[in-house]
Length: 150
Image (tube, rainbow, N blue to C red; front, side, top):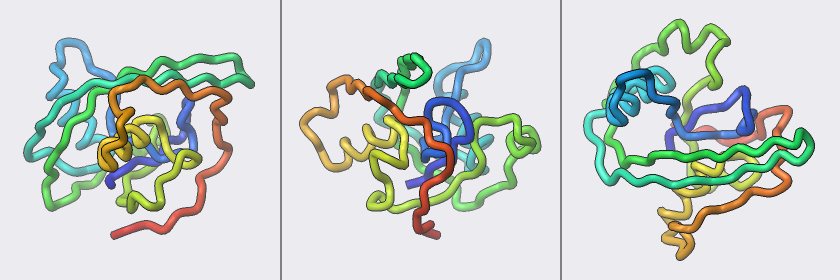
């Protein structure tokens, strides 16, 4: 699975899916294409199977609640990976890099709720349409060790 390393926010030091917020006047598909290029260097060739989910993430230590509403697509990527734009690699973005990781390496402890939902879909869990509440969410202080797939 193509993931990004998050460097801030509730998913800090966890793997997450590429993505981000819409810009003013931008469609969801335009956002998808722009965010994939910005965070991974790949271009989206096609997209299908749009669906929307949400997750509640409670950070008890900081008394913070994040309601994350996310749009998922099945996408086909270009074969070539371009260099990431300078504004993504300047340290002001919330992701450090994109990498390919096997599903077996992605766990509840090293990845975001978005990845958990995709894995649930892949494994056809019966609760894929249920909203999940993550209580006592721990914001990590370092990236977990995993084996990168190339």
